[in-house]
Length: 170
Picture (cartoon, rainbow, N blue to C red):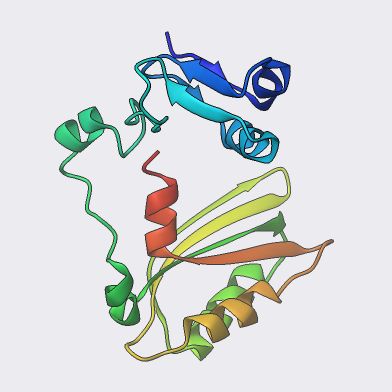
């Protein structure tokens, strides 16, 4: 079982040194509280505290071994050539909503690769996979689309496919 050291544990400590077992997770708030109070957190062996390796999530060793089929998003330097975009929209259904959104995408010279739409009891949810042409402006398209609709109509969100893939790996 994993043990956690919280900021409350640090505040209750009656010592300038807190010793933790290997594998104990010290929360970021506990680390800040200890630093502010001049308290040192260390392992029982006397070594400085180091965060243990993750046991779950995409960075855990099991995930690294068992999920090699997941494509890695491009690295930072490759973002310039990255063109995949995910557009989501949700709100009250009315005639012309899809047309408005796709026309705004077309004005950015982008191509719609895939679209999914669901309407339930007068409300819609649309997800579009979009490809921007090389050299086009992601920020401009994002700004244009996210200004569409309104609080009583619909809301549009735009994100790089890279962000979307990272969000859904956990």
